[in-house]
Length: 199
Ligand SMILES: Cc1cc2nc3c(=O)[nH]c(=O)nc-3n(C[C@H](O)[C@H](O)[C@H](O)COP(=O)(O)O)c2cc1C
Image (cartoon, rainbow, N blue to C red; front, side, top):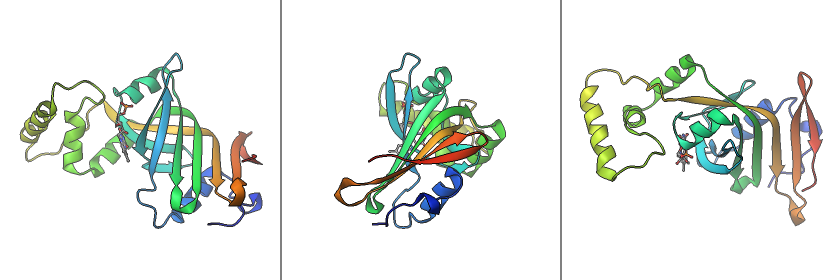
């Protein structure tokens, strides 16, 4: 387990700090897997896993279907929170903030890197909508395979990225006797303020 976290050792912004912890995540399987919480317009929460595909000064990026439950919740209530937990390292990172769509170019660029099967699946799946049975989506996939045979699979307009632009990012480190360390970045002017919270 890591030693005591010291604010003085932390980066000036949470993105650099996230990158440093991510680089040290080494043996963690799928360190980019995060639980993403959204809420409906009237405040009913929901949570599910997503894969973080980018992080930097602009925010934390994930990709999904804009007409999924999360997509619709974010359209009417564009705020979200996410958390990653790396149990072997005793580390948790929490992010909260506003959400915006990535640009069409950014979504196109990422879509183009996906395996062809994933591209076809993104077209075949009306994510979060009811299916009569498994056969329905398998048939849709096969039909799309035929339709796009020999050519590129275009990104569906309903699929793309979201960027969570944080107002707060908390780094948590397990410590003895449950006296865990918590250091949270909050926006202050054009920079960030780092504060220690009780465990
Ligand atoms: C480890 C893991 C990673 C996932 N990554 C994504 C993702 O990046 N994008 C996505 O749309 N769904 C992802 N899913 C599926 C979602 O958890 C969820 O089932 C789906 O997006 C529908 O959620 P919704 O109905 O709340 O919109 C992932 C699931 C797991 C278990």
